[in-house]
Amino acid sequence: MTATYLSSATRTTAATTRNLPTDALSTEPGAASAAMIEGTTDLPLARLRSAKMAYSTRFFWQQVSDGADGHELLRGPEVAPSAGDLVLARVVNIGKHTRLESPHSRRQLLFPGDEIVVAYGHRYAPDQFEAEVPENLQVTNLVAAGGLAGRVTAQHASIDEATVIEPLGLVARDGEALNLSSLSPHHTRPSITRRHGERPRLVTVLGTSMNSGKSTTLACLINGLTSAGLSVAAGKATGTGAGGDPRMFTDAGAQAVLDFTDFGYGSTYRVGYDELKKLVLSMMAALSSADTDVVVLEIADGIYQGETARLVADPEVQGWIDSLVFAAGDALGATKGVDLLHEMGLQVAAVSGVVTASPLASREAGAVLPVSLVPTFDLTVPEVAREVLARDARTK
Image: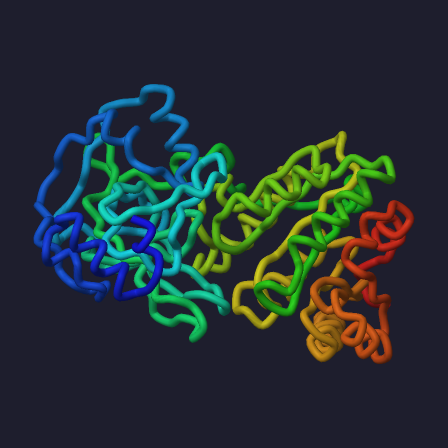
């Protein structure tokens, strides 16, 4: 089966050898599946346990592991999935994502014909895919290794086409589709107000774009603050569900870690703004326990991304931010980002991220930035981390 991963042509050939339904082999996400049978059928516990489950479905996986039974499959041309709905699907063609992240963040190798349990969701990833929840259960794509099913609407030119999956039905109980929102341990609050002087201090990490170094910057800051003797909690407020970043925050020393998947979201792209704002404020509040000195929170993607831009400019969200670190990929992005945030009423404490990996790029940025440029791994030094923490995000 190693030839399955050599090329797109080989991947398609390998899928054919597994005797999958002929109509399911189309790589067009809108293609109809001959295997789709309308109605509700029993979904045995043994079948669920043999399926490869994704990180996004880890709370459902826990129920299945504990022996929860009585599940069903909802299927047919009239079934319309929603973001967060769990789906049992069969892998058709292997593309960009050759592995599925498990509930324990193990990378499970995928083979054509595998049955997987993932969640429907929209995705925004400039370096990979933009995707949307399809209108029906026809053949679609695996658009994130953390376990997100969606129809690709755009992709980066440098990557392979998305892995193709055939939905076999929504996972349901008592005729109702199971959704991540009903399985998660945390829920958003309708109204949250932060009192002045309330502990802990909150540091937010923003960036120019995907892969600008936000998560690594945040992890290094956690490590530095922890080494300074402070109790730190960490969160990832927006993005696409995956276990790597939360586990990195834990490894860095955070005593408590939450991300949006803990609140029932496979991704936050296209979540209504009022709902997204409640999510972010609820996460900030949930992490702000009495025994925590500092909360460090990442808001994903760049500040030009629609939801991120609205969140950062919102006065109520700004009211929670005490200090702000900006991760950038180059000197121009760093300076423009600092200027934009200043226009929004926020002062950047330090610039870090990918730009600091290059001495030449660092020299360029340091010559023009009005704030400190801090190499990412210098944030692990307690004195440096404390200095960043002390700088106020509010402009004078």
